[in-house]
Image 1 (cartoon, rainbow, N blue to C red):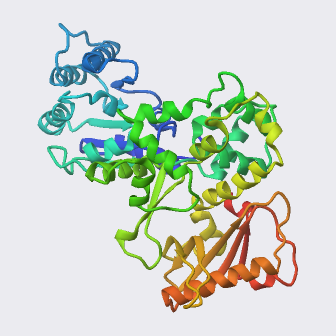
Image 2: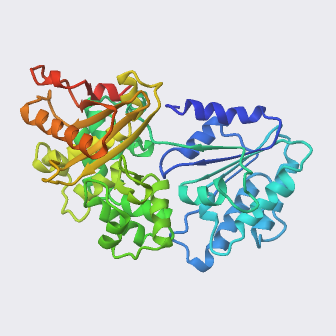
Image 3: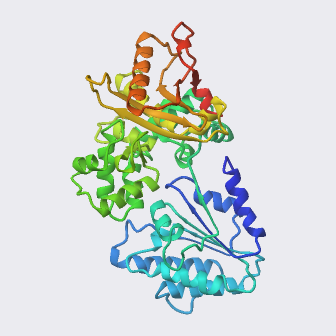
Length: 479
């Protein structure tokens, strides 16, 4: 298994605990939650079950279909139900019989895609509460390990992690599984004998992010452009329709979520809640706020408060690499099977590369801190912008990454994608100095401002390079 060292160690430690364990594992779709759990327990479970997607099932039939599937899993565990399961209480009562009949020292119960099982008026959560609170934790043996997973991160956070009812504070642990880092993607490719340079791995990450499933589709022996054409642009390419499948699998009524994502795809920087409402035509309301929170919990967008501002000034920004790539090059495009190979070195690629590289840097702040030698320093990552004000001598600036440090230094980061060694010139230094001047004038900060350049290759050494406090390259993001 690549990465996931601490997560696997934690899951395996559950077998040594003397009390019942209830753990939630969550993270965006395709991130490897099921693989992690199965590998951690060597595929040995007293009972395991995976909810089925409701996409192709009529809403009126969904509960019945989920219960029938659960019945099949009970049979695979050796228990034949005397009759049809009519409710989730029936289902969990049957699960009790599986546990009672088992000779396993630890009864490991793995329920995957729990959110899909929670259909309209299903009674699933109350049945789970009764099973855990009234039976599993009351057993003298204290031998149950219950693991639940869901790709709908917002659902598991609302209903399990931050539950307000009978499951309030019942979890003994949780794992929020994150995407692979660049280094983990490199190790994964090495394990599959796929040879790509680090720059090519960076480009691939800019397209697909750190989603292991996407990386598993790369073919040995193909160049990166060939692989991208195969995955996105050939007829029936596996990731060509992933956008629709991704959002429809997570949300029962995905239309408004997808409108929010589409609106955010049209702007480079973060925008306000009201601006999203205006672009989408969705009225601002509690339901609208919930949808934004759900998209944030699923890792598609980020919410941040610009440096020096209050909560009410928060901004939203699309950060999912795959989705950004999809809107730039796949959606509504007339494609041919060699699309990506034909686009190489075109202005469209150049424009997209700058934005995509910035996103990769935002996903690798721990690696940036390590390269700066400040891993142990408490920091906050932020962004900031100001509008032009001639009377105040403010030029108008946008800073996509600030690292605000407890040692009273702020790293003002410029992220520049380049296909060769980067050349710092007078224009770059002038723009950087203007940003620093605007930032100091608007924020009145007393912290020292350290300009930092992050680029792909090395920087050509000239008189201007000495103006920067630090320079990092893509190599530093692989730490």
